[in-house]
Image (tube, rainbow, N blue to C red; front, side, top):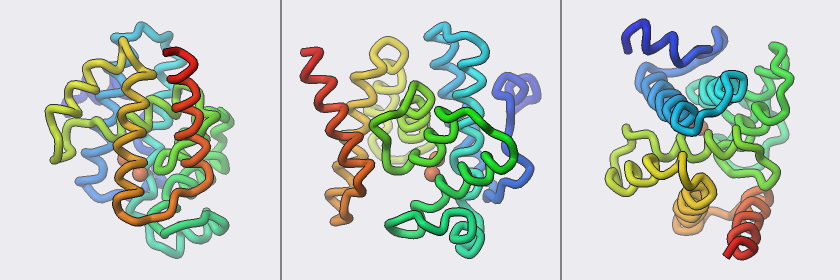
Length: 192
Ligand SMILES: [Fe+2]
Ligand SMILES: [Fe+2]
């Protein structure tokens, strides 16, 4: 990314991040997508900044050693790979991040949360729809294009895919994921 492009995606990775170069590229693509949506949706600068803070934080500890993740997120249920969100949220909070919506977006980005504000919804969708992921490219690109005009519909589609994937892999659904999914079903049946 050139310098002007990088500046437009401020902030950037926190200095305590532990990520591989490939991970950093994923995070940059998520930031680019979220920034494009912010522009298309005409959100104010401070809201855009909240989206980007969550993006830069979400996988900041994705490649940290297991011991570090366990120390920062000792009570996270489920497999170890689900600890990086809670661990990063804990670290960000310790470093002075106070925005509840940003912290919840980061903490629950792998599993979903019924109470999310727009930050959590944007991160959950952009993380999944960024163009670097290999499978179902056209489907992803189409949903990424539609997010600014139909965010609730796209969130529902992304959740259907992500929750479906968890079920398909035989993993149990954690309680926040069940509540998240049910909240989306309730919202869509109320609006139809
Ligand atoms: Fe992640
Ligand atoms: Fe991610």
